[in-house]
Length: 363
Image (tube, rainbow, N blue to C red; front, side, top):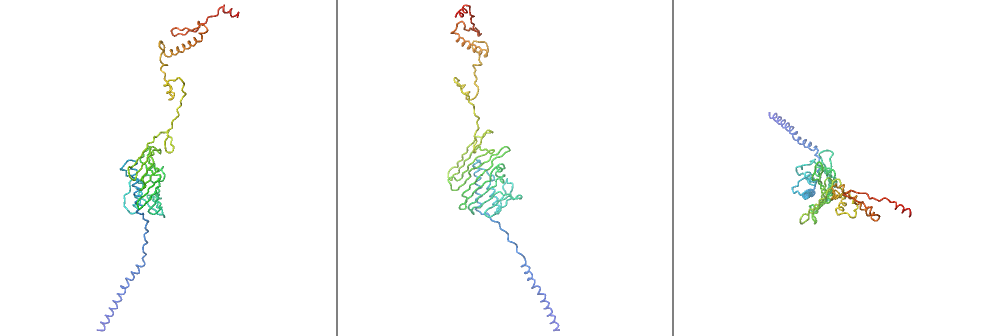
């Protein structure tokens, strides 16, 4: 009995050890499976836009708005500008949540980094269209912004964007602050209707932080592509802001545009030669090229019951008679003409007598 019990115990122990071996090997199989899993690829990180660049763009947007407030004399001006929309794009691409500005034709943008250039493109439809190109001249110091005018119709104005040139702005940063903003061909449309539009175009748009003339804006208001008002604004470092506006007379179809200034075309006035013996009224009328009214020609002659025309005829006849009298006075007094009551009589000559005939023959 003892021997049978010992055999049973040995058999049970052997079964127990065989059942424990697979449990010990199971974790090893799991570890082998884990080593065969391929790790995920690392996520590519996009280049980040520096904080200095974003702050300089934001400050440039504030300068644009201040310039338009001075030009339009509107302290509540809050419309979109070039740099305000670009500031929104750079902030959202950096992870800042902002609401899309109203009035844009596209609210999705994409940035492409190629060496020292950043291409800002509209991503609402394919192919993407470039709106701004940022050239990094010196990291966090000098930048150049090239705005494609044709893609900024909703901001600058549709007609102005179609006729205007691309806008180039140079930005310089000193001690992490905007030191220089210089824009070429900067323009902005202020009004538009079905018949005409008014656009501000500048020849100078310069901000210098430490200059005596800190902010200078020169240019004019163009209505239907014709300059009708010149502007010259100077914001000094210290002192009052100087705003000079000069209205320009706009002529209709007779306008002559030279060097951006309208010159009036005047038709030459013919001045007839002035005869001697004219009255001052006749001289002035001759200079102005108008006829002279002579009231004495239309009035009747005193002492006659006939009309003015008959009186002038009689005056002419009288003058002829008087001249004839002067001629005949030396020849014979009998050949003088005689008039009675305004009637003219022909001079009567006596027929030659016989004595006169004979005297002539004898001679």
